[in-house]
Length: 292
Image 1 (cartoon, rainbow, N blue to C red):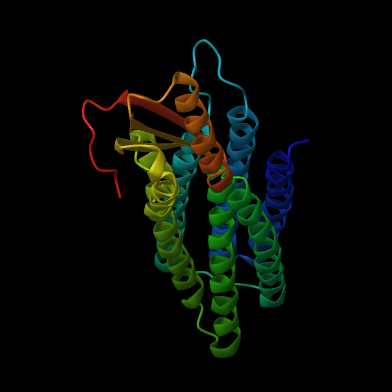
Image 2: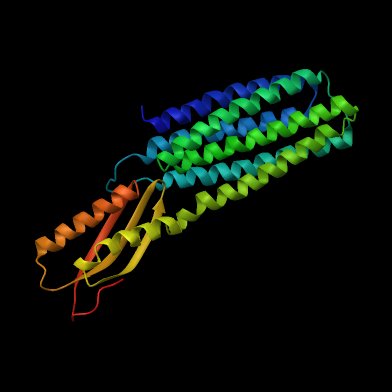
């Protein structure tokens, strides 16, 4: 099984466990903040299934209907996850406001604090693994799932300290306040995730670091061509698409031009994983200075 799929399955199993434990404990002790975390984890569970589907589908090779591959499925997955986070935040805020209006007392704070502390620890470990695998394999879906769970670490700690304040002060208002603070953190994570996942759907360029890296590689071969221009890049899931025009001296043979392109493509592929490079060769119409 692909390591990305293994990571996605780990997220599914951990979220399933957390949803059940938070929901049971939250209902038993009557804590809206713990129940809000159960809702958040249920949201995470759905997101984990979406991420699992995305990483398994995005690796399919190009076909007749998708000649550029299926990489953007990961971006679609990340965008859906971001929308789900927005929905979860809205549900949590509603539950918290209802608790403030109607009142209610949190029972057995110890159990609530225990499940929140364990949730924070488990999500910290799983999110670290997802982010590591996602970054190493350029998987937007896994990075989105990892960011999703990283938010859970903060929200679980927020609920934990909210329950701790109730235990110390006796003021029940800290429970819905903690839930609302959880929702605010979730909204911030949703905004960041939306930007990261959605922009590549508009064929946004690679980040400045990868573009600069591509240009530095081209400069290594400046003695072999006249100039390059029309450098374009775009991101599709973990795949990076790079194309440009390379102007050569008309005296160069087809074989020499081919060999040069092969070498440049290999260098870029080695530095930017999962990159697809397309070079359009142009003969120089005049002898001109090389691009520097």
